[in-house]
Image (tube, rainbow, N blue to C red):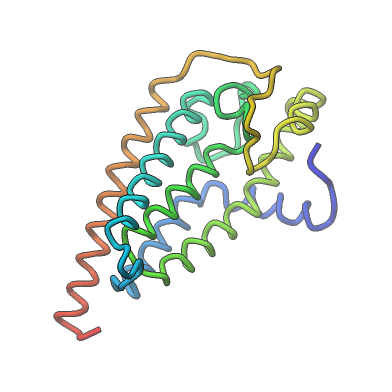
Length: 210
């Protein structure tokens, strides 16, 4: 069962307030990135290997997000915290927040492809801001919604660092293909962001000299 304290109460309340604005936070970060992004010699003599690993991380993050979204259902993309059922199967049998873990993996991969350490700093700041608030808010909701069942799940499955073997009591359900398609749209958005940031860096360099 997630711990309850004054700090966790604060972050849970903050998470409820920003949950429906999480997309706005991400878009704001992209706009900030467009102002400062500049490709650099990020990997040195290992540029090719670094790019390959970064691309693999992006694919792995997208695949994990799609798997998790399919197991959880379409409510994961809505503006409010919802859970018609407690998802414990698929990646949820290894880690309680596979979508957020996948987003971190994906974000690290994007930073590698963009090849700018300032993007890593921005990425870390956004993830810390969002997940230190949203995760406690979701845990508080799930605790109230599912009670002892959620407490037992928390006792056996870690929050963000996955266990190697799946939880034996996990409930397996068919994947929601509609939710998986939503992650395909995310892939297109990432391509647009990558092209947009590269274009912004080129325009700043040629028009404004920085």
